[in-house]
Image 1 (cartoon, rainbow, N blue to C red):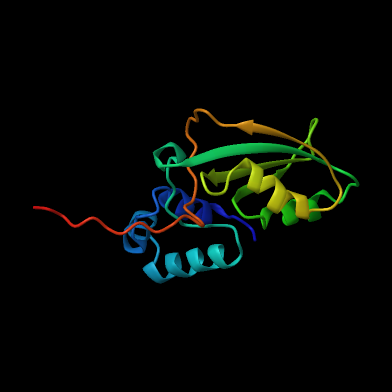
Image 2 (image 1 turned 180 degrees about the horizontal axis):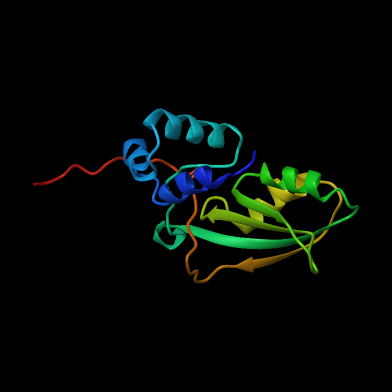
Length: 158
Protein backbone atom coordinates (compact mmCIF):
# COMPACT_ATOMS: atom_id res chain seq x y z
CA UNK A 1 0.00 0.00 0.00
CA UNK A 2 1.24 3.47 -0.89
CA UNK A 3 1.38 5.83 2.07
CA UNK A 4 0.43 9.17 0.56
CA UNK A 5 0.46 12.48 2.45
CA UNK A 6 -3.16 12.02 3.57
CA UNK A 7 -2.52 8.54 5.00
CA UNK A 8 0.58 9.81 6.82
CA UNK A 9 -1.36 12.78 8.22
CA UNK A 10 -4.14 10.48 9.48
CA UNK A 11 -1.60 8.15 11.09
CA UNK A 12 0.12 11.13 12.70
CA UNK A 13 -3.19 12.22 14.24
CA UNK A 14 -3.71 8.71 15.63
CA UNK A 15 -0.49 8.71 17.68
CA UNK A 16 -2.37 8.48 20.94
CA UNK A 17 -4.97 6.13 19.42
CA UNK A 18 -7.90 8.07 20.87
CA UNK A 19 -8.46 10.94 18.43
CA UNK A 20 -11.88 10.62 16.85
CA UNK A 21 -12.32 10.26 13.12
CA UNK A 22 -14.51 13.38 13.24
CA UNK A 23 -11.71 15.44 14.82
CA UNK A 24 -9.15 14.15 12.33
CA UNK A 25 -11.50 14.87 9.43
CA UNK A 26 -12.02 18.43 10.63
CA UNK A 27 -8.32 19.10 11.08
CA UNK A 28 -7.45 17.66 7.65
CA UNK A 29 -10.48 19.09 5.80
CA UNK A 30 -11.69 15.61 4.86
CA UNK A 31 -15.01 13.85 5.17
CA UNK A 32 -15.28 11.67 8.28
CA UNK A 33 -16.14 8.70 6.03
CA UNK A 34 -12.89 9.22 4.12
CA UNK A 35 -10.87 9.07 7.33
CA UNK A 36 -12.80 6.00 8.51
CA UNK A 37 -12.33 4.13 5.22
CA UNK A 38 -8.63 5.01 4.98
CA UNK A 39 -8.00 3.84 8.55
CA UNK A 40 -9.90 0.61 7.88
CA UNK A 41 -7.84 0.00 4.73
CA UNK A 42 -4.56 0.74 6.56
CA UNK A 43 -5.54 -1.75 9.28
CA UNK A 44 -6.78 -4.38 6.80
CA UNK A 45 -3.52 -4.18 4.85
CA UNK A 46 -1.39 -4.53 7.98
CA UNK A 47 0.10 -1.04 7.72
CA UNK A 48 -1.55 0.33 10.88
CA UNK A 49 -2.47 -1.13 14.22
CA UNK A 50 -4.24 0.76 16.97
CA UNK A 51 -3.73 -0.76 20.39
CA UNK A 52 -3.08 0.02 24.01
CA UNK A 53 0.55 -0.42 25.03
CA UNK A 54 1.99 -0.52 28.51
CA UNK A 55 5.35 0.01 30.13
CA UNK A 56 6.44 -3.57 30.90
CA UNK A 57 8.00 -2.45 34.18
CA UNK A 58 4.47 -1.65 35.43
CA UNK A 59 3.37 -5.26 34.97
CA UNK A 60 3.83 -7.42 38.06
CA UNK A 61 5.89 -10.58 37.67
CA UNK A 62 6.79 -9.86 34.03
CA UNK A 63 10.21 -9.72 32.44
CA UNK A 64 11.31 -8.64 28.98
CA UNK A 65 14.11 -10.53 27.28
CA UNK A 66 15.72 -10.02 23.92
CA UNK A 67 17.26 -13.00 22.21
CA UNK A 68 19.82 -12.81 19.46
CA UNK A 69 19.37 -15.86 17.21
CA UNK A 70 21.72 -17.36 14.64
CA UNK A 71 20.12 -19.84 12.26
CA UNK A 72 21.43 -22.37 9.77
CA UNK A 73 20.58 -21.41 6.22
CA UNK A 74 19.42 -18.13 4.77
CA UNK A 75 15.62 -18.40 4.87
CA UNK A 76 15.54 -15.70 7.54
CA UNK A 77 12.01 -14.51 6.84
CA UNK A 78 10.61 -18.02 7.30
CA UNK A 79 12.55 -18.44 10.55
CA UNK A 80 11.35 -15.03 11.72
CA UNK A 81 7.76 -16.04 11.08
CA UNK A 82 8.28 -19.29 13.02
CA UNK A 83 9.70 -17.41 16.00
CA UNK A 84 6.88 -14.86 15.86
CA UNK A 85 4.36 -17.61 16.62
CA UNK A 86 6.07 -18.77 19.82
CA UNK A 87 4.40 -18.24 23.17
CA UNK A 88 5.61 -15.06 24.84
CA UNK A 89 7.07 -13.48 21.71
CA UNK A 90 6.20 -9.82 21.22
CA UNK A 91 8.28 -9.12 18.12
CA UNK A 92 10.86 -10.59 15.78
CA UNK A 93 13.22 -8.63 13.54
CA UNK A 94 15.48 -9.90 10.77
CA UNK A 95 18.71 -7.95 11.30
CA UNK A 96 22.25 -7.45 10.13
CA UNK A 97 25.28 -8.07 12.33
CA UNK A 98 26.28 -11.06 14.38
CA UNK A 99 22.69 -12.30 14.75
CA UNK A 100 20.13 -13.19 12.09
CA UNK A 101 17.09 -12.43 14.25
CA UNK A 102 16.35 -10.38 17.33
CA UNK A 103 13.41 -11.80 19.28
CA UNK A 104 11.68 -9.83 22.02
CA UNK A 105 9.64 -11.84 24.49
CA UNK A 106 7.67 -11.18 27.65
CA UNK A 107 8.07 -13.86 30.28
CA UNK A 108 6.46 -14.43 33.66
CA UNK A 109 7.14 -16.30 36.86
CA UNK A 110 5.06 -19.21 35.46
CA UNK A 111 6.64 -19.06 32.00
CA UNK A 112 10.27 -18.05 32.40
CA UNK A 113 13.47 -18.46 30.42
CA UNK A 114 13.68 -22.21 31.01
CA UNK A 115 10.15 -22.81 29.73
CA UNK A 116 10.60 -20.39 26.83
CA UNK A 117 13.69 -22.20 25.58
CA UNK A 118 12.70 -25.81 26.37
CA UNK A 119 9.03 -25.61 25.36
CA UNK A 120 9.10 -23.03 22.58
CA UNK A 121 12.50 -22.31 21.01
CA UNK A 122 13.39 -26.02 21.07
CA UNK A 123 10.54 -26.68 18.61
CA UNK A 124 12.26 -24.69 15.85
CA UNK A 125 14.70 -26.54 13.59
CA UNK A 126 18.03 -25.21 12.38
CA UNK A 127 18.75 -22.81 15.23
CA UNK A 128 22.52 -22.55 15.40
CA UNK A 129 22.80 -20.50 18.61
CA UNK A 130 21.03 -18.01 20.83
CA UNK A 131 22.20 -15.29 23.17
CA UNK A 132 19.79 -13.91 25.76
CA UNK A 133 19.68 -10.32 26.96
CA UNK A 134 17.57 -9.76 30.08
CA UNK A 135 16.14 -6.24 30.18
CA UNK A 136 16.74 -4.73 33.62
CA UNK A 137 15.53 -1.24 32.73
CA UNK A 138 13.99 0.12 29.54
CA UNK A 139 13.35 3.58 28.19
CA UNK A 140 10.46 4.33 25.81
CA UNK A 141 9.55 0.63 25.56
CA UNK A 142 5.84 -0.09 25.48
CA UNK A 143 4.43 -3.55 24.84
CA UNK A 144 1.02 -5.10 24.12
CA UNK A 145 -0.73 -7.10 26.80
CA UNK A 146 -1.16 -10.07 24.46
CA UNK A 147 -1.53 -13.29 26.37
CA UNK A 148 -1.60 -11.59 29.75
CA UNK A 149 -4.20 -12.61 32.31
CA UNK A 150 -7.16 -10.27 32.58
CA UNK A 151 -7.37 -8.67 36.00
CA UNK A 152 -10.76 -8.04 37.50
CA UNK A 153 -11.64 -4.35 37.61
CA UNK A 154 -11.43 -2.70 41.00
CA UNK A 155 -14.65 -1.03 42.04
CA UNK A 156 -14.47 2.70 42.58
CA UNK A 157 -14.82 3.40 46.30
CA UNK A 158 -16.14 6.96 46.03
